[in-house]
Image (tube, rainbow, N blue to C red; front, side):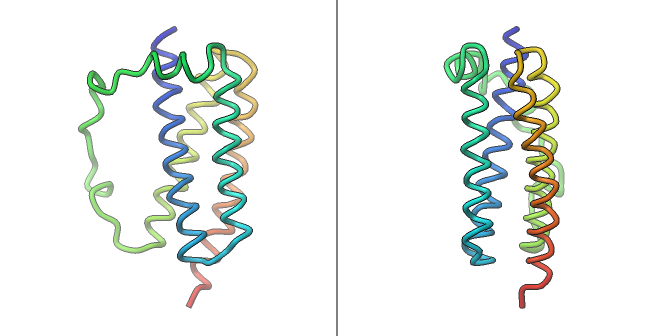
Length: 139
């Protein structure tokens, strides 16, 4: 079961990091208080859902093996640079959505928390439309 917790821990971190980048875009690039607040709420909701897993945060952190992660040093060319704020937003929206899908699937092995991860994924689909439209419309 340790492997499942490792996957969940890595994807929780990935989702929170992506949400934080999006929150900063909403706050400092779009100057949108409502969107900033919603992204922050989603990020905190994700942490709450993680706390509902058996063993909670302790079990997640205990299962972590950052030093032994065989994928920690792998980078694609696209990950090494971003050409625009729009591209940065897209990359982080996709990061959150992909992580939420992994959390949903692996979360099923740990109990009912998977439903919260599915909700997160669908919330980010809606946010994707809003964020990208606002970025396109920004002068």
